[in-house]
Length: 250
Image (cartoon, rainbow, N blue to C red; front, side, top):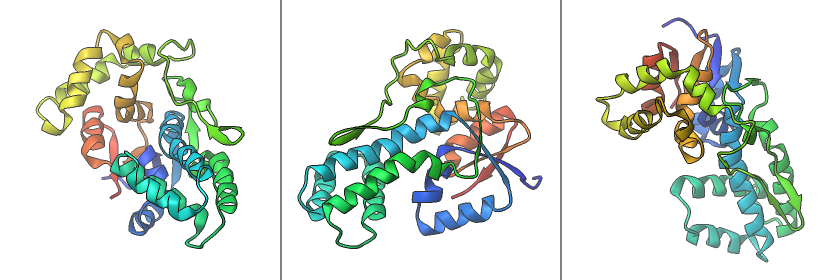
């Protein structure tokens, strides 16, 4: 494989670079050192709907409690997915720094983190406009005392959304992906979704768009880039079908 000089990052790499395990962060830093780092504005939508959303949720949780031990206990009991709970605990560690800070201090730290998260995660990364034109990529967390909020909901009716046109323009690529993964048991859901939306691209708007996130990122990537992800299982088959180079970090 040719040596990677231009790296196109997915959201898993961007988020893990800051919030991943130490060994993963080290691997990412080594892989990206002295490389031209690029991505699509679509990953800002994914950042908003994951780590920023979790930081906003954590802020509301802390604001309701008298001490941080109560926050920790509520996080353990709250019906969250394992991945989301882990992100919230990492965010909590970021704003407590393993010290017994007052709730007010932690809230102030978390507020600064919420406002700065997109810039922190995308530092040194050049963004190209996604062909989807996703309007949620421009959303930012807003403060209405005493809590923050962020809009991560797709209404399917935004006039700025160009998803259907983007998928229609890439119909031949979508067929290539569908055919390539047809026998891949790990890609049953994506294969079924592509079967539904090819020739009926408007059906992809809304919740289906999120499920197409990896595909959209790969379609947005320039041909001369290595697409980089910690999610080999999902990204490698898509890259293979599009004949795009893949760089694994895991």
